Structures are given as structure tokens and as C-alpha cells.
Length: 209
Image (cartoon, rainbow, N blue to C red; front, side):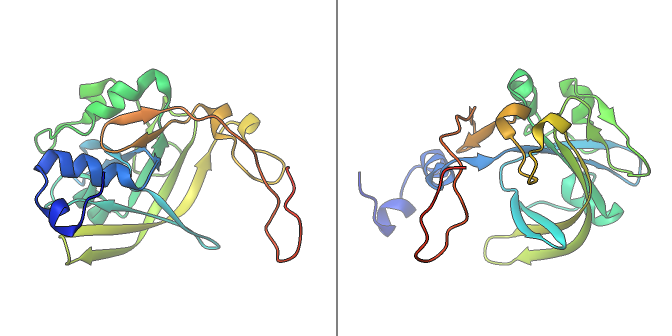
């Protein structure tokens, strides 16, 4: 199949959404935990998380057009913190349900059976069931006028992961942790490592690690 610009613009809405969302390949899929100023917990499903830098440790994700209410965007803006939690195969259906549009103030933790976990003085709830999770402080919010979305950039302030999943050089073994990935809007996958390679340099042979 070949789609030109006019074809893409005239595709049926849901078909186009599935096509474009899966076009970039496999994506990180996580649960983002927040808490409102009113004390209501929120848990949202996101597949737009990406790495920005390691020093300082920054990551970012995209929020679709939304009002600042007791939701992920509003809670992060108002409290300045959030958690990011990996998803395991045994609870991916529960995680998917967190993408449903519950009324403001309704806790997805309660609706889907996840356990809110509070660690140290971090105000946002972690997902107790997740193996790998980390907390972030809001450092920048960028409104993207092009399509009304919001880029949220957070500084990573705490990481929690099984010791057995962290290799000697710091690489996290995501398969050992059981973390899943996704494609499109609703397709979930487990991974199969095919190899790890040495740092690429000009005129130097790449080696298997």
C-alpha cells in the first residue's frame, strides 16, 4: 500500500489514527501516577514517553489536548510531581483500562485494582505492582500550538528497580524485569532480545557484547 498526503488526510478517522500511531514502530508504554491538590489519585496510560538526557536526568511525554482539571496534566501542573511505572504482562488489561475517560476526581487506582504506593516524601503515588518505577519533578511544560498537545518534561529524582535487572554498566534488563511494550493505540507486546553491540566508532569493528 502507498498513501500520499491526500490519501492520508481522507482516511476514515479510526483507521488513520491506528495507522499513524503504529507507523513509528514499538513504543514505551507506562502508567503515570499523580495526585490532585484535593487529594484524589489519578493513573493514566501513556505511550509517548521518551528520553531527553542523562545529566541532568530528564524525560518527557506528550499529553493530548486536555483541560487542566484533576487529571494527569492538571495534577502535574498544580503539584509539580508525578511517577512513571512500567507495565507487566499480568496486568496489561488493567493498565489499558486506565485510558478510559473517567469523571474528574475518580481514581483509576480504585477502578482498576492497582495499589497506590507512597515512598519517602514523594507526593505522587507509585504503582505497587510495577517492577520498575521512577519519580519526576516538573521542570518544563511546553504547549504545542500546532495540535493543542502539551509536552511535559520531568527531572528524574528517584528510581526503583530490582537489583537483578540492573547490569554492571547500568543497562536495565527490561526482559528480566518483565516490562512490556506497545504499538499503535491498543496492541501490547513482549520483547525478545536479539543482541547488544559495542559503541559505534569510525573505522572500528562493532562487536557483540
